[in-house]
Image 1 (tube, each protein chain N blue to C red):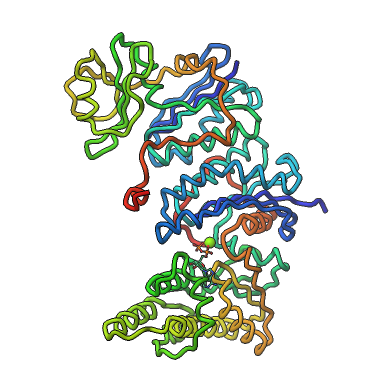
Image 2: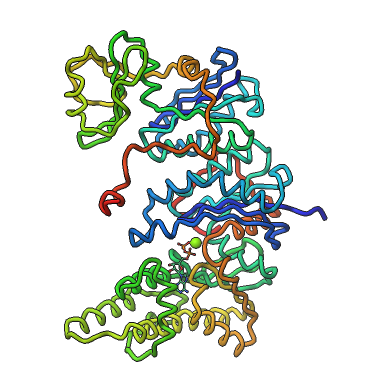
Length: 334
Length: 207
Ligand SMILES: Nc1ncnc2c1ncn2[C@@H]1O[C@H](COP(=O)(O)OP(=O)(O)O)[C@@H](O)[C@H]1O
Ligand SMILES: [Mg+2]
């Protein structure tokens, strides 16, 4: 069988990234220009600034990726592009570049949903085994998805309010941790113990999540202690928050695996980098004989390798777009 | 000499291909929200109509601002990607200069783009299209003040309240391209929008 090389482009938020992946599973090279340092000054991603950075960097990351892979675009089979969801001004830059490359080099254009990308990041470690449950935990998403085959997604449940990453970042902010606070809160919690009592979120029969109540509880607790002039133990608060949040995610995930009698779990999205979540999922899967796949940290946050990997399976399924392809800020997983 | 011209700095796509001093294909069409969807397909049609391929190009001229931030990025990204792929240069030009060049008036020229809340993107050029006042993001009142002693004509497609002679902007793509005939252009990696305006977040943070 002929090898398939997919060049992927991702620009949905604050990373401009280009990658070449062979047969959906082997990353040959990735070049990413991250804007974290720039947005740190503003306590969050500023969409207009993100767009401005993408346009500066787009041709540079493409060139750098090809150089690293020691390839020319002529050698590539197809071009995969994140069409959404994400920041529209950011998405548009990657989209114009991808469409233009597809035209100039006469290569098929393969549209990829950003969350499909996060899920397929796991293919860069090992091929997906079906049926599986995908737990997507990121800055914008908290979802349980059932897959019986490639690109066959059935959403079982999701967050009713804040996404888990968003919740981490907001809680971290209240605790005075700089943006993005999720990873810093994770680190800080290791020095603490879960001594604060916080409400358990949405402990019901559904596969849905709710984190806004937990977030408010942490904010109120922080505020009340301050009013009383008491010093809050930040490490303990971080540990308490993590325990409740992670327990909720793990219990709903376990329920989905049990109810559908599925023994493959894959985790996707930036919050998959969270150390407590990784630990708790590993324990749960060991106890229940479930095969667990969590991508390494570099594939958890936004990157083009995951888009190129998803792009390979989409390409195999015959998914194509013409030059009218447009970016979408919101769009259902497909 | 084969040149591709792209201007997406307003709601319009203005684009054309010039081959040996002739405009062989062109488009001037309003797209607004659909620009990101339609820009590349329309540019491809221009190549087909001109009966050349991108590989035949010697240079790209692209408007790098001022105007719609998103619009400018669409045109620039297409231009950068084509030029990078084909290893040719880009001449980035001001949309205000393009407006001045397209006008045939024998007076001074004041191209204006509405920037809202009393502000404009504007400049002043003499009849030979030399800059008298640089492109700026400026209060309309202030710019009019600076020009009150000049015999001047305003070029704009926006509804601005001004009591001096006005003409609307209809790009003369051939004239614009010829104006920049001798420009060698620059490496596409170096081509970036000139917004003339910081983002709100930067202004607030005093950056
Ligand atoms: N170790 C961690 N613990 C908790 N959250 C984390 C950790 N590492 C990253 N995150 C969170 O992951 C999110 C970013 O993930 P990403 O997949 O890029 O999100 P999206 O693409 O939906 O914006 C941020 O909210 C960040 O705080
Ligand atoms: Mg993401």
